[in-house]
Length: 311
Image 1 (cartoon, rainbow, N blue to C red):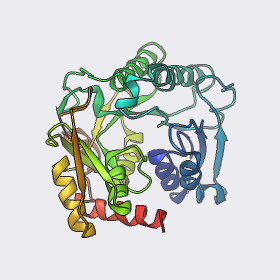
Image 2 (tube, one colour):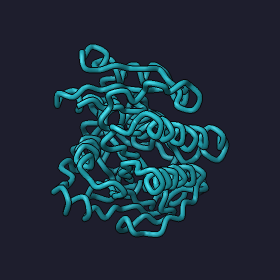
Image 3 (cartoon, rainbow, N blue to C red):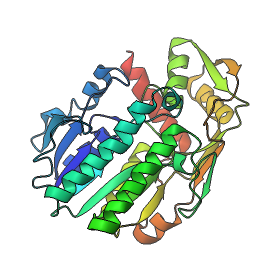
């Protein structure tokens, strides 16, 4: 089958594209290469993909470029592209609004005009739509406390509007704290490991008791692929089975590396989530999905990858 993956050069998008290629599918990848983090990171992400006959990469900005022909022959759309991260969304709201909402609207319009043959359109959303406490099932109230969460919830509402009015075959996936090789350099576990590798100080915001339900990247990809067979309109939490505080993660990384952190504490950041842990019963009941990679194993894999990046 032919798939469209937006954000194909990013953390999740590149892993998803690789798995699709390995399973024998064709992938049309799209990425705007917005300088949210260094271009070289994304080029490294797609180095293997560029060598594969079934992969095509288009440098395209969904917000402004001509999308005619983008969906030609495509059966499944994985809309992974987004401006991610909580803190930057306070200072660059235009960037988050255009990347997360406007780009989604233009993709949906492209579907409406020339994508009626598309069988599923999956939107990658986030636990941030739930707000400060994201604990429970997909029926939890959505009360985002950051501009990032607001824009991702707006993208969900847009998708529902196109489902209700035009029959768009939408499935929504709410990801919880994805980590592993290729994690973005602004994300917590990347920054922690980088500090250990380079003997740098790290900042812990607030009391360090924030809890995350961590999801290893391969478990995220498996859930995403299974959701292709979900009914339009379904929403799924995608989260791992282990929680950890910031301090717990730091202790695990110290044991793993045999090194010690130098920590500086600063006040809590606005919009930061206090506790996240996904109830994934719906995903398990419908598809038998369950996370396979434990937190210690996943952190070890990310450590090895980041270590290899600096030689």
